[in-house]
Image (tube, rainbow, N blue to C red):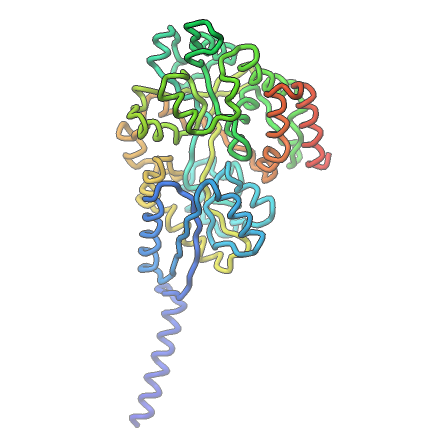
Length: 436
């Protein structure tokens, strides 16, 4: 009798165990991996805290690994090539996420994305990569940061909040802000500056010039596909106007193509430039370096536009993606959703990562982003979301910039190729890549 009762008890425990393993209170013996490149060390610690909390709640282990920002693209491409990718990848608009999608290495998450997620994310969330990535942070990358004191000294009034200078107004202001006091041909203060970097990051410098003139490298063809946008006069005008900032208008330092952050930071700190096109993270950097307060020591305006352009700031997203090689796609997505749909977690992550605004409506409503307590708050910056514009939702876009546009564009602005010839060459190569 005792033996029979023991067997029955063991069977009952077996059934209960099965229910526990498959029911609503499921605790799983699963490990998923996440790779990120968020620069502040505190971000890595916060993600590890998230992982610990998630394991307590679900039993799922999340292993967090960090790859430095500057080597993120190369490291990820190597892992994709070897088939040794993590379950979750942190990517960025200008660090190759679109390239991963184009390679077929990322999972289309359309079947995973919940209605709640769609409702919570801002309207532009899927503008760039469709449902192949879930954006969690956003950053205006081509706003014009300017120094009010230098404007006042030169008698220049910035455009009203929510408005943008025309291109001609911008150039005229930049000329007044370019000061060569000793007349030696080398201004002590330049009216405008931008970084002429290479690769994906260079898009932040070059894209705004095309958009300001109503141009782009590719445009919708009206039939669900894409066509070259470089066979329009607006593209020629845009690139010619940028080159003229150095050669004719003489408001920008000729050596800007080689500028990295150290050069730009030095020029800013020594009052060598009155306006600088850069990303939102710049505000946090100069505050830390020089104690400059946003809205007081410097402010922001929309990128200047031509008659065919629109007020905007070229913006980028930070994404979570799931590689096609992941064997735990469903669990990986659940962890992503667990972070993004919680307003507190999203706001905490955004604050730690240089106060880049989160992508969910509930997290944006956090007082740390919605009023004067926001370190980057100003009347002008409060309008930033109205300016945000993202790259087209074509996985070919970023790759075309790197392989085709940047090398030829740099030949144009350095005088090695004429604007007309350069644009024609870019146009022909883009059409070839599109099969036209």
